[in-house]
Image (cartoon, rainbow over all chains, first blue to last red; front, side, top):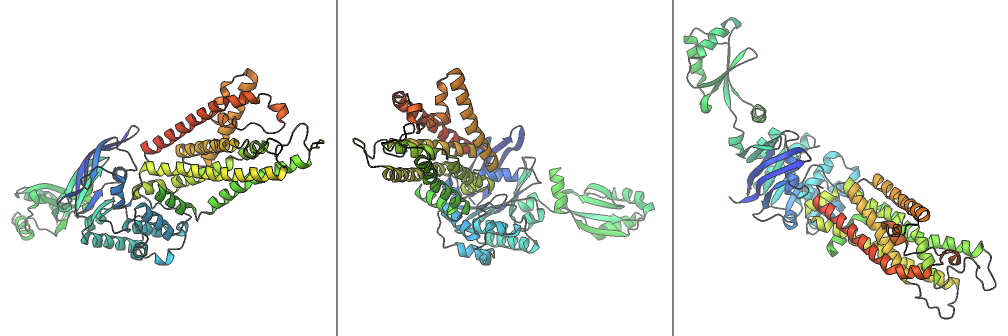
Length: 299
Length: 268
């Protein structure tokens, strides 16, 4: 799989503040690549640099294996931060300007307005649009000319639950068509639901990058509970088990984490505890949430 | 560049403020001259030759070129307002970023603004030419040895001054980005330079103040009224014109350079 975008050692300073530090990763062709990180982690700065609206302090990037140029940006549909349109013009006229800059005709405007369900409001001024409509118009602008690469920065910002679900479905549909999508978000479930690859940023540093199933592995664990007076007995009984990596007490329950995800059978644990004279009143296999995993990575 | 200009046209053709400011600019050129013509025609007594002994006939050929351009130059703030509004709108709406994201180079974005200023200045200069011809033909028949085009180089000087003021407006818009603040700074700078020049010229007889950015282009269009009182050094002014033009060109080059470098180099 060839790379659509290759980022090499990008660093960005805002005065004394280091917003990005030596960030490098590749975006494979046909992937839905999530750039994940808490607010202020440098996601938008990174996208701003690769779209030439921000200057990197050092480092380079290439699109389609070539040095960056405006011709390449014409082939990419980009929604960066907020929808940027002329407030006094209608949605349709704004799209006409975007299409002209991208070097495309007006033919596609009707189609993209239909996709984002703005056909009825195409003649209304942009300033009269709701936040969600503005966001949808920005997505429509990205889709002009059916580009093979899309860059979305927080695409569900300002959308209602229906709009969020619709946008996610749209991204999935676009991915199915084989488009490469670069998606920046701080919403983990958004990334989990649509991305094939992910890069995690924190305070401008790249923590991890790669296949989403590897980077954001869901770790299973077992939760056990006993009467309060048997807590100590339970702990000593569990200490004899093999393959336990970590044992934590949370809200009166004991959580068991195993090495390399090789989790024990629940019946086996129950039998082991019973043999040791401990009667469990709570035994459950649980999945570590993506949020916990993300917190673990970013803390 | 032609396609970029078409896109610029798409941006403004449905913008009411653009049409209002453009209309005011274009109407104000004959408007202020009509007002001054009426004052000259009605308020001051005329001698036997039909001329006021002090003010002369400022709207007759060849002086009409100087008079019309100088009067119009009093209103440079209006076209400057238009330039500032159109440029700072891009920053307010963040469309300067979007244009680059969508596929314009930064150089093209700023280049097309510079071309717009040239086209706008050419349009205003055409109105100047028509206005001067109109008032000149109304005011008198051509005297002996006087031709219509005599003194018409003032229209070119007006063009230079118009480009210069517009470029200062564009430069300030790119540097400041906010419309209200840019208009305020533009006003204050224009006023401050005038006061500075008058003070140093009158109090200390410093000649170099003639070459300040605003003043050097102002020098191209001398005060057209009561020339017998105020223009006793016409020959010297004539000799200095190439210097004024050369320094104006140098300033224009600097404005272009700073404006382009600023937009190309910084974060948008």
